[in-house]
Image (cartoon, rainbow, N blue to C red; front, top):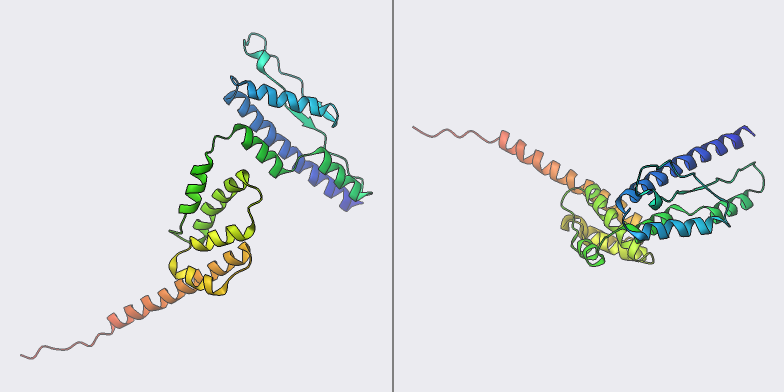
Length: 223
């Protein structure tokens, strides 16, 4: 029972944190988009849906003296389903039904408020190449990958795996092509291993060169 209580407390804490993040994002969007009717329409639609999905609205703040107070729409607050340790599948089903998952939420937010240009994103993705470490390249790749998936969530893993390998440094890519990794995670793991191998070879070569320079024979010039 103690484990169940602990799990429930942890999940509720995570839910409260997520709710705070969502509320903060909504507040910022209210300020940024206050003169656009799309905001009011979007949140009004959320209120209408909430009447049938156990959504409790927060009371609007006191906006007396503010000429824009009629434009303020409270953000819906969703009650997190309580888990008592029984009927786990039913509880999970209820959570999935009443609460949007994070990818759905971020996709909806970006669809409505983001001004990213598809052609620009695709162009940057195609031009991306490794210029530093594999980790640095991965960070840039993952950022552009997330934008690509927003525009087309059905892009297969093979596409990203091939694109990732294509942008690697030549001294890493050659070995990768011969190994033919089947998944993106395999490609990443092999790229890091190959990077370590290349660095080790360069380190040994550099040290060998230094040793050679330090032990050059000292030929004396005849008088």
